[in-house]
Length: 142
Image 1 (cartoon, rainbow, N blue to C red):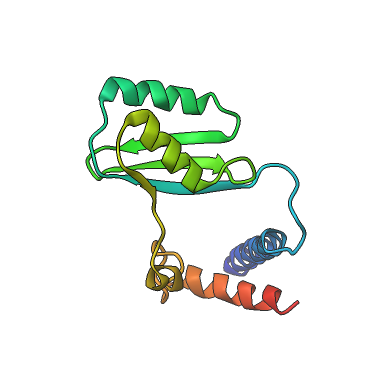
Image 2 (cartoon, helix red, strand yellow):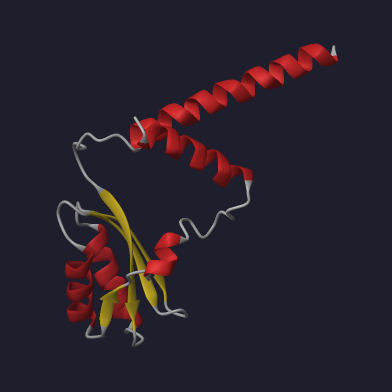
């Protein structure tokens, strides 16, 4: 009975690893993607915008085809937008938002140290990070 459970669990893990490998290969492929190229950008603001005007601008942006999400964090002073980079750049978004809300707005750019640390949500000593690094090293050599 235990042997059957272990074989089933092992098979499931193996299938999931194969699916993960195929997914990573597809995501890191060299081909140009068709359709939108969604990017998440953080736009930092120095002033607190008017709430009524902010809601109007947020609704206006969400009606645009190249904006998929628009989140506001007034306490920390930033917006998070999911936008199509093929249609508009993050700098253009920040400039436009700053003009519409009459505030100083700039696209956040991580430092070289932050970029080198990869994903800050996953510790480098975790199994997930190690497994992802293994697949990344395999597929970047292909």
